[in-house]
Length: 142
Image 1 (cartoon, one colour):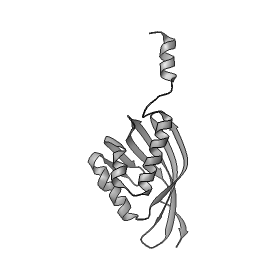
Image 2 (tube, one colour; image 1 turned 30 degrees about the vertical axis):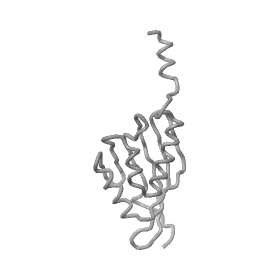
Image 3 (cartoon, one colour; image 1 turned 120 degrees about the horizontal axis):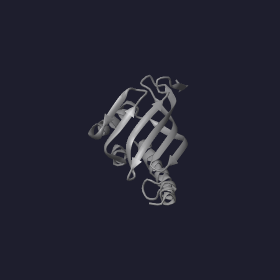
Image 4 (cartoon, helix red, strand yellow; image 1 turned 180 degrees about the vertical axis):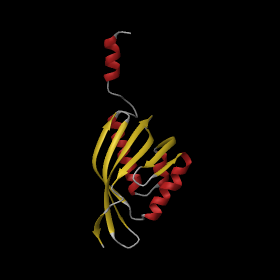
């Protein structure tokens, strides 16, 4: 095959479910599902065998373990909400910067920042790698 043809194929923008523009829309819907605490909708965005790893909390679940894990997050933080700060999308990959807010068991309103890294295949999330400052949240009110 001609080298120029190969280079054009590699550099050509991806189309379909894994194209950057499509992934931006997918992540917007995924974020809406998180803010609605809709566990079923969240899980539908995941590929089979998906890995959810919160590196800050030292938590890693995959496949069928994800649904109960996400449900527990909402049980522990019933008013958890996320606000997007920046989104970086390229073909097959999204990096999302966000701020979370929630009320702890003592009634204090907290917030923390984080970054999620999402590789995709066929429009579905293969992994969710979470890095955040949740170990040292900011006090918004008490």
